[in-house]
Structures are given as C-alpha cells and as structure tokens.
Image (tube, rainbow, N blue to C red):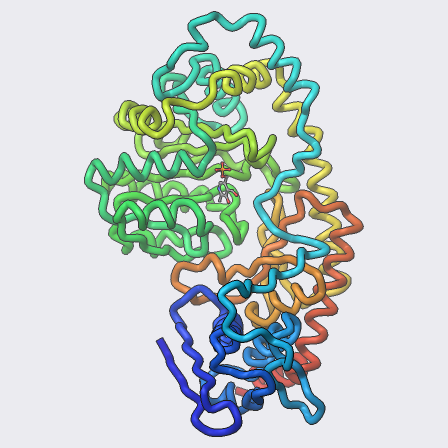
Length: 485
Ligand SMILES: Cc1ncc(COP(=O)(O)O)c(C=O)c1O
C-alpha cells in the first residue's frame, strides 16, 4: 500500500492512497481518491489540482495514469480544465452530500463484453415442441422430489451426446445435473474441502467470478498456474502442490489456447500421482471453426477428471442448465451437496432438454449457429487487421471471444477507459490475472454483435488508441527506446 500526501503546491490536502496489489487500475484509484476528497469537502470548489506531471512523480506512476484520472473526473463534472493547462475542482460541485451518488458510466454504444450468447437465436419453436412432448408424456412420478443427480432421461441423453461428440466416457449413473457451471464448481469445491483438500490450482488468468471466489470463500488456498499460448503450463502445475486443478483445456479462458495432447497426458499423470482431481470446464467446446476437434480430458481418466458442461453458451444462460460427469467415488457426495443447495434443478427443463437432445435439435441448433458466430469472428479479425494491425489476436479458432495482445507501448489501464470515452465497452486480460503480472491484452466478446457493429467498435477502439498515442508521444518513441536498450 503506497500513501502520498502532496505537501506543496495548490492542493495541499490532496490525499491519495494507492494499493498496488489491488485489481483496480491505478487511474481508477486516483480518481476515486480525488472524488472522495471533493465529496467529503476536503477539496473545495475552485481548488487547483497539482499538475499531472507533479502528481505522477509524487505517486510514482506514469503521467498518462494521472491524465486518465483527471479526464474521467472532468467527464463526470467533478473537475474543470482551465486555460493554461491546469485543473480545478468544478465550481458547482456539491460538497459532502450523503446523497451524492457516483455518476454512472454511460452505457457503451458498442459492448465487446464477453460471456454472452445470442439469445435472440434461442430455438423457441423446437424447445416448445419438446416442452409439449414432455408435458403430455412424462410419468407422474417425474414431478415428485428426485435424488440430487436429476432426471434419468437427461443422464442418458447427455451421456450419449457427450460420448459421441466430446469423446467423454460418461456413464449415465455418474451424471449430475446442476444449475450451470457456476453451481457445478461450487458443489465440487464444497465436496473437495469436506474430503480434506487444502489447495486448488487455477489457470492464471482465468474467470474471476466462479472458482476463484468460491474456493477462497471455502477456505482453500488458491494458486495461480501461468498460462502459455497452449493453455496451462504443466511444469508450473507440477510445483503447485495442489489437491485439484480447474482447467479450460479446449479453449483456455480468456487467452484461447488449446492444451496439447502431450500436456493433457501430463496433467492426467500429475493427477494420478497426487490423487488429485482435474476439473475440466468445457464451456466453449461446441463452437469450433477452423481446427480439428479436441476430445474432452474426462475420456482419458474418468476416475480423476470431473467434466463440467453448460447450456449457457450454446442455448441461453438464463436456462441455468449445466451438467457434471463425476468420478464414481464422488457422485454420492456431489448429489448430496446438490440436494442441500436447492433440492434439485427444475424437472420440466431437464426433461425438455433431454427430449431436445434426443430429437437431434441440439445438433441442429449448433450447426445453425456455428456459421453465424464464425462470420462475426471473421468480421472482428478483418477489422482488427485493417484498423489495428499491431494488436495480436489469439485463440481465434473457437469460442465466442478473441483476445488481442497489445503492443508494448499500450497499457490496458489507459486503453480501457479511453475506449469507454469513445462509447466502447471492453475488458482487459489484467482484470483476470491472479498474480497481477503479464502482458496486456483485450477481450473481444463478439457473440451478440452484428458484423457492422463489430467493425464500428474496432474503429472506435482505433480512435481511442490514436488519442492515447497523441497524449503520450506515440508508439514510435517507446519502440525506439526498446530497440536501443
Ligand atoms: C470460464 C467459464 N466457464 C463457464 C461459464 C458458464 O457459467 P454458467 O454455466 O454458470 O452460466 C462461464 C460464464 O461466462 C465462464 O466464463
């Protein structure tokens, strides 16, 4: 935690605390401190702020970071830019009002937010046919309480589908239906903790709103295992001393790498040697565009791998339908945890999905959607090539998002807010790093954007990046420095 009071110059009471370990970017921390000072009345209307260069030097950050913070507060109306290049607290700012609320960021015009599925394409007619069938044919006892695993019809339909398409080795008796991956991982972590697990390995970077949060809340020590271009680095897993690892081997989230056959075999050997559990999150496997299929790891070692699937990416996240293929020795515990959590997932939805699978509607839906998403991905890659060729897209062969790595002169912490000012919503890879360190990159979710919107979004991003470079002296300068060092 760094703390600085600027003792000289016009804003003597400007108190800024920086927490360099926090996931919140520094420019946001600075903006929040100044905003707080204005609201609390420590910074009165008309008070001058230190020049950006002075404040940046005092805080030990780059000038661009302070410029970002000031610009944000000018946009929110807390600060005003004056001629001569200095900045003051705006004259009309309300002081220390308990009711003052933070100005919400304007909704982005174009949002590259990830994790969204084009729900406008939900196959309503086919789903309705399955609902009708189920309501007319399901036996009465299906509407009674079930055991925690769910309905047998769905266990069978999913086992058939996954063994055929994903190369799993699923026995219907080992399938547990849950409320999406989010619940599945929570149930698994609960069971592993009860069985004595102390440490869990997660890919670094990885999603920050499921396994990470649940594992920490359950008292597990979390260790981030770095990810390379081909997914998790198995050499680093070897030294992690973990009882379980969560992987996204078919399309690493968010960097998009695919774990090689050799690395998969090594992970399985690691799990067998340590009696550890591999949790395979196969969230993205169905959308594959220009690479050959990669089978699920669960098929290689059904006693050591828990397979997690979800309908959130393929059909709709609002369905809240997910499934686990659980090693036999853990099935009863996971089913008991599910009963405890919510007494089982809704029966009608499970039966409907089973019928939908058996009729071949799921395959049909995926066949229809693959070219739709592929065209959107191609539009994104084409626009990046044209307007921002210095960004390096990765993990493009599958999924519903692409990561593009930034060149060294661009900082995520500057690009994301600059993009927001141009009406563009986008996330940076850094938000999902467990260790906090690593190259800068942007995550482009393209699933719900039309091709024209994607192209426009990239134009806005290019404009934002041009603006940053104009403020910081452009890419050439840094590139020269790097070359001469
Ligand atoms: C890495 C990852 N796995 C799985 C999911 C799906 O979660 P759920 O099935 O709970 O909707 C998400 C959601 O965005 C995700 O980011």
